[in-house]
Amino acid sequence: MFLAFIIVVIFASAMFIAAFKDATTMTIPNWISLALTASFFVVIPFVWPGWPDFGTHILVGLAFFLGGFAMFAFGWLGGGDAKLMAATGLWWQWADATVYVLNTTLIGAAIALGLIIGRKFIPVRILTAPWAYKMFKDEKKMPYGLALAAGALITLPQSQIFLTAVGL
Image 1 (spheres, rainbow, N blue to C red):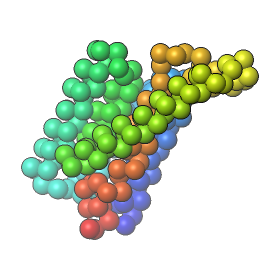
Image 2 (image 1 turned 90 degrees about the vertical axis):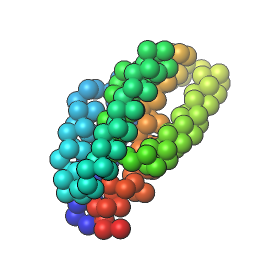
Image 3 (image 1 turned 120 degrees about the horizontal axis):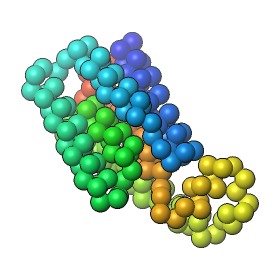
């Protein structure tokens, strides 16, 4: 149970910091994705799933890296979002990744809808916080790190790596 607690603290901390940074600055620092990647490699020996499942973790991370790179190239995601997505992908098996993509997509759609409505009806001049002003003024950007982090936090408790850590 202690291992599950450590996983939650590490993973949730990285996600909360990424979401906060993206919401307030529209950037996700590289160190967050690097820390998330490094912590995966520190945690995985303690929940060792065997070589085939470990390989799947690497393949999911690689698939998310390639997908994120493509979305970045098309201008659909920022670079920080793509890196966070790839680092998060390491933590998943294919079934977990499917749940993560679904959760992230739904949350991203809700955030996008909220921003569209907010940008239409909230006068920017009343937004005194610099981060709020920036988020609602720039009509081409969205802090997708919020959706990535929320999707990851919702997915983690049902993921194979977490269930193994709690002994299920």
